[in-house]
Length: 147
Image 1 (spheres, rainbow, N blue to C red):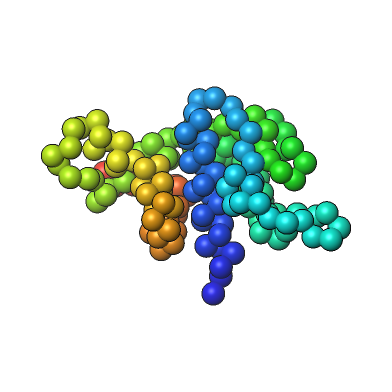
Image 2: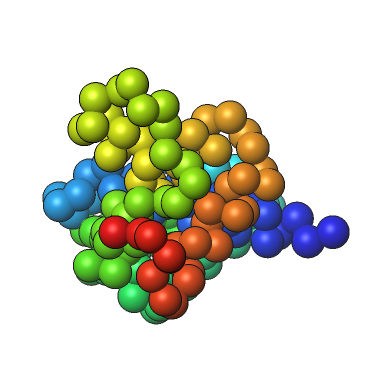
């Protein structure tokens, strides 16, 4: 089983959602805020889990989903912000996830976004749903029926 890939999906979702909530402001994106504090090893190096989370954030930047000005040691990305691609992916509608019709249209619109669905999957600790939703971030063509 590839548990590190499940952690990658969780880190991607948590990191992008943190930036989505701050958008359009730049913010420091701390690894410990995403995964909790991890004790460094006896040499003061970050734990493998900490390094993996930071690696996922750096990979997102390399792939164009976010931008940042610098790193704060191994602790954070400083002045991080979603790129246009990251913002558009998170704010698009996820098909077949449309909430109840009796809600106001503005609430239905927000709840049908990928960002909302990711936030719900994280809150419910639904790993399978989180993996499926996170994969939607990386799909090149727009989703059928997505806006």
